[in-house]
Image (tube, rainbow, N blue to C red; front, side, top):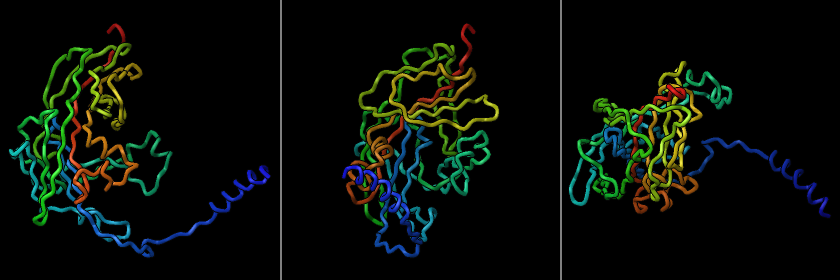
Length: 302
């Protein structure tokens, strides 16, 4: 009897797998009330890069597109205690991201050498801080307040500190002042030269930092390379497998709300694990405290 049941399993799997029905969007009967979603991404070392997105959600059956989903007439403010630090202003192109412009997924392109030829940039609307000439302190509580149609929604967040490199002394420091409205902001760059046989970045372990983000790009690569972006547990990043050359390296420290909203995606957006507005609206406010580096890797003995 056991033999029969074992044989039946793959047969049933084939039969059930062959049952397929194509349902068009027009056939979907969705009873759905759009919700407001507020997403505040703050970068304490680079406040000009911070973006506040306020949108209405919509379903796959809705004719609303991304541009119509934007809420452009909200009033928003960043506070520390009872003191207002900055208001926000709407920009049609607040920031942008790189995506692959493909009609359908093609592994030969996505993982091939010609992937850069299919990259495109998508800008999106959002709110930017009116005032960025202030220090967003680590371990201090901040309040994001958003008013829409006379209803006010608030949430709080506490930034984690950016990493402090402890195993090397920087060659020099410089600043990038990339101009207002570009979405790039102003930040300090740490320059460091390392021998490739011992190259690594170390920083004190932060028990409150669940993960770090790593963005890495070889600046002198031919043809130009797209940045590699990944999450990393830290606090030691080894660079000994890299080729000699000049690299842009950004190490970001996630705070609690950033980590839970972006990384715990097994929970739905309205779950208290990822939603920090108390159920009235969806969303969060959080920080990615980034450290910007330019690393020159040289052969041993150079």
